[in-house]
Amino acid sequence: MMNGVKVRRITVKDVPQIIEIQESITKKKISKAWIQSIEAHLRKHDVVGFVALRDDGVVGFIIGEIKGPGFGIEKSGWIVVVGVCARCMGIGIGRALAKKLFEYFRRKGIQDIYTAVRWDAIDMLSFFKSIGFDRSEFINLGKHLD
Image 1: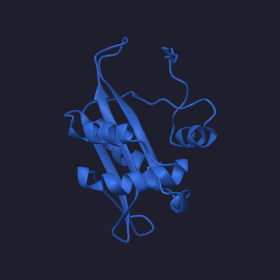
Image 2 (image 1 turned 120 degrees about the vertical axis):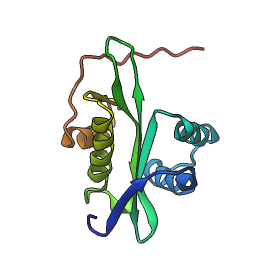
Image 3 (image 1 turned 90 degrees about the vertical axis):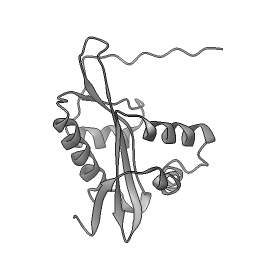
Image 4 (image 1 turned 90 degrees about the horizontal axis):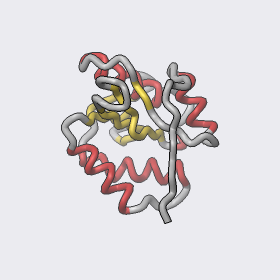
C-alpha cells in the first residue's frame, strides 16, 4: 500500500469509475464505443487489468494484454490503456499500477512490453519514459480510410 492506495485486479464493475477518470483526463464525455471497447477487453482471456483504490474509490487503472505471435515476436505484453484521476496524478499511482502489470507479465513469461502513445502526448511520453520505456524496434504506421 502506498499513500493509502491499494491495487487490486480490475472487474467490469469498475467501468463506471474508469469512465469518470478518463473523462477527468480528457475533459470530455467518453464515447459509447470506448466504453464498449473497455468492457470487451475485460472479457478477453489474455487481458488483465488493475485498479488503484483510495478511500474505497477507484483513482487509477491500467489494462494490458498478451499478444502473439506476430510481427516478428513470439509473445509480448501490451499496455492498452492507463489512467489516473487528475487530482491524484504525480504521486506514483501510475507507477504502482504499471509495476503490478509488469509482475503479471513476468509471471506469464513475457519479457517485452509495448504500448502506443500519440507523438504530441508529452505527459504520457514522460510517464512511460519514467517507468523504463523507450523507442522500440517497431514503427507505428497509420492510414485513414475515407
